[in-house]
Length: 88
Image (tube, rainbow, N blue to C red; front, top):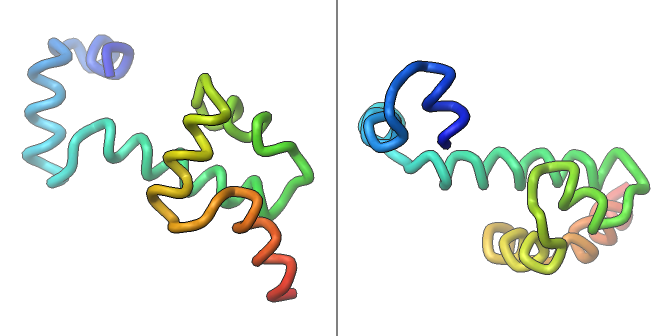
């Protein structure tokens, strides 16, 4: 958030307030949603390990990535990838 706020020349607090008012979600909620969406694409389109995908989308800890992925999707990254193979 600090990086984005500095690019648009506002304080992080002001950016956070404006972002929430305009989008109806916090910047962190938005960022997490984008990261999960991108990780789904990578799980389907590549053979990268889940840990590598975690780093690729911006998570510093693969275990935390798996936790957040499951929290948002209801299944683990491994289950997501395996389930997509069943659909093909």
